[in-house]
Length: 123
Image (cartoon, rainbow, N blue to C red; front, side):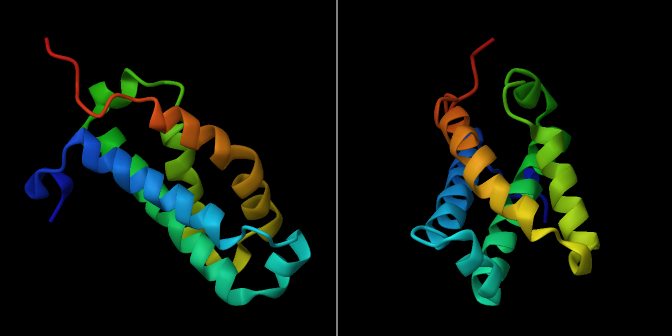
């Protein structure tokens, strides 16, 4: 069942994305990079949330291209690409990139997504 069949709205997509970001960041709160590298459960939990984030981005690009196009500040295709690399090459997941994403990209991404109106503009 795809998002159209579930009748997801923009607000649903954005809420899923914010939830995934906040959970991923929460999992590493208070951890050092070495703590993260030594904790397989936390790695798996964070990677799952990044996969969710990338999957939602892919759904938005595929099913709501106009919405994605109105928000070029969000790296929709890059998130989808990261999701695909992790999902299909999980033995090669670079944990340094995951850590850098958590601390470098996700805070900014959270701010950008939080600023997007949850309802589409009326035409």
